[in-house]
Length: 380
Image (tube, rainbow, N blue to C red; front, side):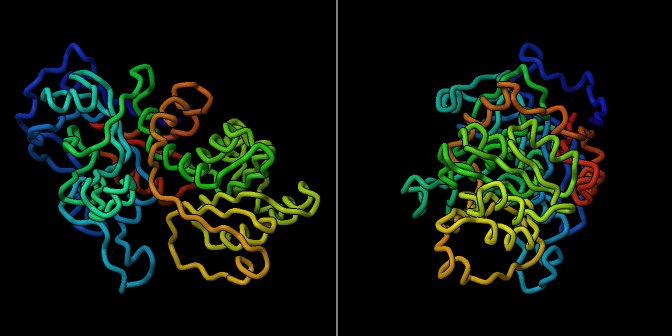
């Protein structure tokens, strides 16, 4: 793992050194001014309002959706008709961990946290008043204010951020490396996809793609005690990590045909569940072909282009269940426990920890993908 020491005497993450009323002065933050126009700037430390919390950011991860926003959705897809889905003049960053530095009694009671506690917040700040929120489906909230995408909810690529009063907040162990603790966000997403697959003890589960989400899916499927957890990727060291996360079988799709390999393992039947985490169009077709009849396909990816498939496979041929997965509702406590358990090789999953000033290098590493798995920025 590559790690840069960014510790300074100005920002110390110890409970007894944090003073309330710190929301005075300036801070460093990455600010989006549009596609490929991100800049490290000096901006005011946000002022915390009633029922909110000011948090000193310890670590923030970079994911594929951050990269899509950086390039602009239209350019990312090669389709100028697609609207931008991230606002400008916003601080990015939606997977993070930090320390509470200022909070009032109302917020402290609501979230059961206090000054000095290490915390994270679910990436979406629900409105709690729309069609979905009123039915308990908060992760599909209509306004869909996710940290780092909307001006109402600035993100964590900064030294400080605010948790709004409507946020969902969780405590995180202080014993974890900060960048490892910030992995709770992508891991919660992976576990939600696993839950969408309704995995049982007898199931053969295939995970396509062994990036951060895919490795989390492997760990989640293994925790469900599936009969087989098969990981697919074209990079051997990622497949090695998949085995350490709980995969029972791995196949390098650059050397082996995944459909043939899975059928041979299952007596010609095919897999029960396919979890797609690669974002490659070919992985969608691969999954439809290697699933058995009445199998379950779960999609959780950021795609760079449209995908066309023969829908007859889904209907007339196999009667498949095709399921989407979005965010990580109700999975955050489980994700935190899984990281805290030490069962994941976090030191090898988080391949890069960089200072905030190196945000551009971080984005480039995620875009290239050949030498990184999870890249984290360390403000301060």
